[in-house]
Length: 459
Ligand code: NAP
Image (cartoon, rainbow, N blue to C red; front, top):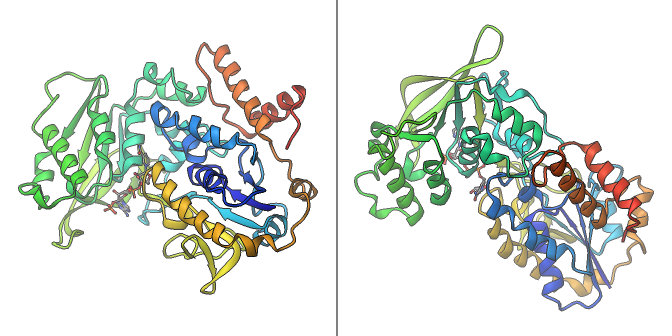
């Protein structure tokens, strides 16, 4: 018997579990997938925007994996809390694969970042995704202007949600509080601002195009911003995705859709880097001060000493995620990842027996959901190559009992199914489809009370 813990039930964790049971060379292999939250699916549930139903439907594939009889989901188990250290986990399992993602937002490092009305995109995404740790701060939706800093897919997501009309969000599982707040939002113009040019933007073309297809919303691009991009006149040397992005913004700058009256607008700006978030007398965000940049000839940009201010009541900083160190596990702060070799965790340069990583904590916060598949496979190949040695080690006979002895009360798969039923019931009462429960107490009550009443045993 080989008992493996996978820490994290987002895409990388689930693909790791799938590869463990699917690559199948080890009979008697059992996998416990632990998650800090009572709910599975990680960023597919708590990061993918609610209006991206097609990507969200990936949950169906992840569900099939977690329902495999060799895999057991244990929610509401936080590694690092109540004595459940990486060292303790190794006493319960022959191997542990950390798939804990990159939980924190990167900082801008400019004055004013802490002003009221300035948020990381992660905070905003957590709020509209009903993450139970999200803080409902009202989010400065009084309007009329908002600035989104960054040019990745998260920037595109939050920009889109800010201008979506309530009737478009209502059919999604967005929590009722966020839906109501967005329905009364006064935000009419969103500036999405990149420090480099359109040819260097990180968003993908499908996501970018979606902005142009939003009802009652115009996308505006300033041609003088674009003309600064060295690739503007000759995009032939660009990778395909950048070329396509450039084509899309070029069509917008030429005025596509500009003549149509619209209630809201999205303004894409380039070659502006934030230098300060400016506040009003009450300490609220009032504007963002940017320095105009120009290409430095090496793919980056340099400042020009010319400045511009964009007024805004809301600032969302969408400049990327960052890995968070897990006490007891090595961490490379410069990369925000756990040092590894083909997924084997390195301690002082040598592979640590039984410890592995996959996903963003292994390779950094880049790539789409599918990128996690080959990443997980590589890690699992390493683990299975080590299986004989790993299995020879004695571990505690019953990890579930050991977790409970430490004071953890794992939510089993049946508890998660009970949460799903409670969310369907909540949506029914609101005249909507399933609506996410946004708080810890609500999730735990749904998981425990409904789960127990219906007699689902754990395990
Ligand atoms: P990202 O793709 O790394 O983009 C970060 C953006 O922030 C870049 O435009 C970057 O500019 C900018 N930036 C970084 N530091 C900055 C600073 N100090 N000042 C100004 N701008 C700064 O990160 P992300 O948008 O958080 O996305 C993370 C990953 O999730 C990506 O792989 C993304 O594709 C994926 N994702 C996918 C979807 C989807 O498929 N629909 C949705 C959401 C997220 P530079 O390029 O100049 O550094």
